[in-house]
Image (tube, rainbow over all chains, first blue to last red; front, top):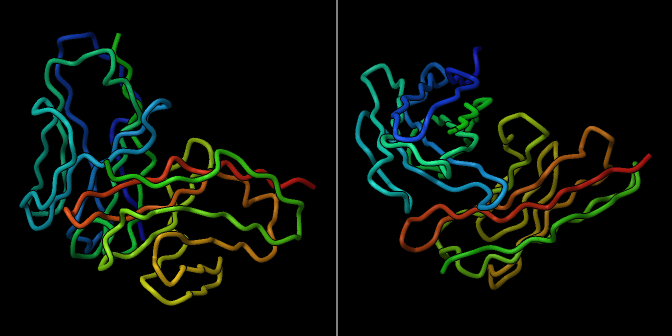
Amino acid sequence: KAGVTQTPRYLIKTRGQQVTLSCSPISGHRSVSWYQQTPGQGLQFLFEYFSETQRNKGNFPGRFSGRQFSNSRSEMNVSTLELGDSALYLCASSLDGQALRTEAFFGQGTRLTVV
Amino acid sequence: DAKTTQPTSMDCAEGRAANLPCNHSTISGNEYVYWYRQIHSQGPQYIIHGLKNNETNEMASLIITEDRKSSTLILPHATLRDTAVYYCIGKTSYDKVIFGPGTSLSVIP
């Protein structure tokens, strides 16, 4: 079966712009979680959605937001981009439950560069 | 602040066991400890998880101390394809997901 698909794979944006990243989970998976990975901070949890509801949120400013659609596909949005938002953004899907309560399958990530 | 700690890097000879430790004293007593690995430029891959008892699957074994403050991931016969960054992950009692900094394992021929 198809894995987790993230689009786009690479993105270059200018400071102050906004960006939307997309994640299509494995078919049948209802939970999608998002993570930011940077060389300085490592992997950090952004938020998690289950059945279109945000279940949990990490310590990120309100510029970071997300949503989940009825088909479980999820998007995350970052507004007013800053240089420090440059990172690899990963999403993971799992069958149900809260992030990391069950085995999660990660996508390849979207590499965002803010210039 | 909740955090986990892991060695920055480790080497292991091919065919030998790789033992990767993690200290996670702030992971809630009711939450599982998860181990994932990330091979360069790919998304993390699930390896194993456990709560209190030792666990084994086809990839690895997980030893969790009785006080749950630390665990060790064991790759019994490391191969070159096991070269990756290994993360231990858990959740705090405040339901926050916390990642270890990761251990870069190099398997040497």
